[in-house]
Length: 191
Image (cartoon, rainbow, N blue to C red):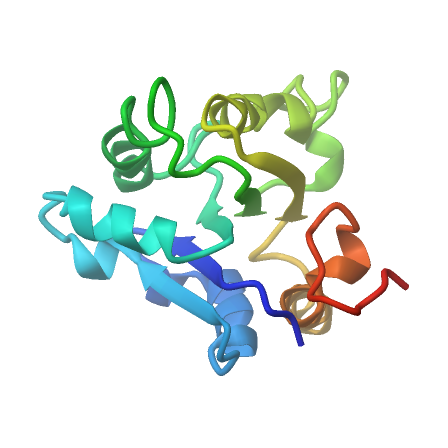
């Protein structure tokens, strides 16, 4: 188990209809070092309590943004959260509250993996599409970790979706195994 405190900012406007995100959340809900924060349940009116959100960010080492890919971006409430919470003076500019923290995007898509390539339907790789998030992490002096992407989220077999959820949980239990740049507890070595 890790000593890192992990915050999952979950943003899905209709989570009960997302079989993929339900599988992911079901697999991780009992991890004691992980806080799952559902933005749409907390802020149905979109009025974000910036101070409360900043306190959550400060209290955690790894910030995971879990959401579906909507129009090559994130759902609207997450965009509002990014703009208001990770603002200049707190997360960038003279603010350094997020410096040294880790950012990971956990994304579900409606398209097949091959659709996310220069020759595919979307004409861009998933890395290109997620570049604005990587730039935001960099602006906030956060370390960008490789995204975890579940393509074709509603159409893949349930066993494959569950395997993806299990991999997600395994990473959360021992993030050092797959992201050696994360700091270790004293006396622990990367394996």
